[in-house]
Length: 292
Image 1 (cartoon, one colour):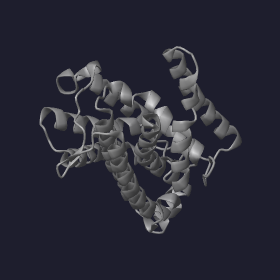
Image 2 (cartoon, rainbow, N blue to C red; image 1 turned 30 degrees about the vertical axis):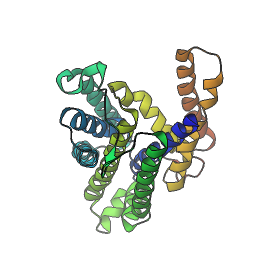
Image 3 (cartoon, one colour; image 1 turned 90 degrees about the vertical axis):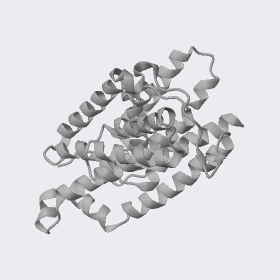
Image 4 (tube, rainbow, N blue to C red; image 1 turned 180 degrees about the horizontal axis):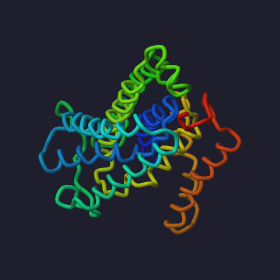
């Protein structure tokens, strides 16, 4: 029972991360590879505030979202000048830099040792200490985020960023400020991603820099690519598939390091197969992930 609850909690935690990744990758058409760094910033902010300064759950969560949003704004600036794989290289470099800071800023992050003892969420005096209670919390956040992001992704704002994705010059000729919309997309992605990172941290109770390395990027990318780019429901489907598909490996008598390698091998194979046979993903509406 606890095992099934754990998987369900992971799905509810990853759905907002996949949706926000899809906003930039699928809807705006930016090869965005920095998402683990962004929600890692939110996660570390939350962990530091709750462990070192005893900040309450909700203020720490919101602060993590705002700090991540500032990082998202900084990251958006190169996106105003670069296109295609150049943005991908820049955002990947940002991920590597932030991960390096997580390792080397030992006084703040404890480096490779990570931050243990992150308290369980507490709201109005109630502590979400059990898996079933945390599932109710994470599901509630997932539904709230899902409703907000659904409205955003089906709003005039989404139509404009899709127009920018297809032909930025044409969007500019009809009076759309592409720079403003790109920055707004980055801010939305970073804010909700930062809160999602903090929520995941509160569940794990411990984080270290390896929670936000390139392996984590493979997971969120696979959710978007397999589920479907520029598709709200595709991101949700992708989260279910990527979390559940490798789980049978747990019941195979293999060394842990082999199981870990096979897990990421499955993710990589799924991405390759989708790129070849289903470029838009299972529910996606577009196949070209590079901005023109």
